[in-house]
Amino acid sequence: MRRHILAVAGAAGLLLAATGAPSRAYEYQQIFSEPLAGMEGRPRAVAPPREVVAYNGRYAPGTIVISTEERHLYYILPGNQAVKYGIGVGRPGFEWSGSRRVAMKREWPSWTPPSQMLRRRPDLPRFMPGGPENPLGARAMYLGGTLYRIHGSNEPQTIGQAVSSGCIRMTNEDVVDLYDRVKVGTRVVVLR
Image 1: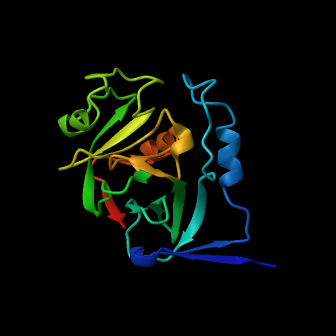
Image 2: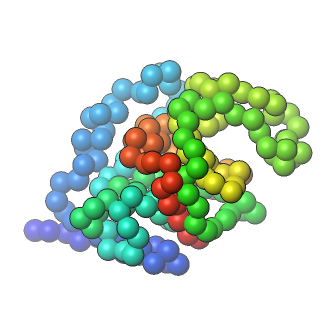
């Protein structure tokens, strides 16, 4: 018997269907059963594992589609499929939407808080080198024309919540997976 689960992302206009057929979620859990190097002993995310789902939408393969309402990021694959990841999004007042492109990619990026953030939080360090303590986590994809990034997190327990200053947070394991799929120039569509 095949089960069909439909998830419609309201304003997002996405129609995703996951069948009862075995998903790749189990395979991904096996790959990442050990913490990412440098992250041993840190809290693990409470977000559901990423999975490959059916995709019947208008965006081309290779596009990243983010539904902030659902708190999911979809990387569109060929063959009417997408990889679905759990994410953290901007807290109230820091939500945004639009279309951007990945302008730059960095592994274990350093972090310099923007001046707007330092005005709100003068207690923050002025610079933080990349590593397990860094809030950008294991990977970052910088969205052109903005201060926003899709990045990992040193607080994986926040995935699924609206707590960021507008960036899209992922678990370090998930951001490494996405980073390896994405090229500079990839289109990113953020929907509210």
